[in-house]
Image 1: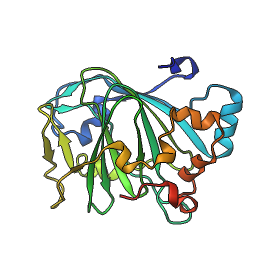
Image 2: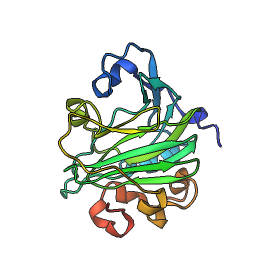
Image 3: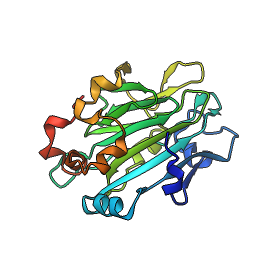
Length: 231
């Protein structure tokens, strides 16, 4: 795996205190950093300009393994707003090292999907889905993502409901969040089942290097429906 850190600036640190509103046990007495986010990375000024002109951002997130008082360490969780056409912004992730569980939930809570992904696998988060990323392994999880830079993520639903519809415990069990109404069981889907072939072509950064216009689907999903996974 390439040493992407040489292209990155200072990280944004998400602490356990930041995660407390979404933890299964908000009284958890742990503290310190939970994970690091390196945002708006580019290998060259030319790449950065190409991304910027298309309202795109390439990020890397590092999540060390940790037991947060009975549940695996995770990201805070968020939804994306709708774009001007009225369709939600999608996002694409790729695991660079380690293992990830992407827990996706439709905004109306009609579907909950757990997607396990290993090194090199790509997961496309479709429009209209909120998502949390969990590190269920014993090593660091490092993942890249490309997303539109036209919006700010909305964390409010997850904060108001103390996290996602399910917590993944260190025992491996998925425990329903009691703050939620009746929700369907979480179904497990493999990355290839929800991520169309055009998004599984090698390195995620390779799409930037090739100047692949498929990335515009992350800004204008209504124009690229044939490339998007609709769960």
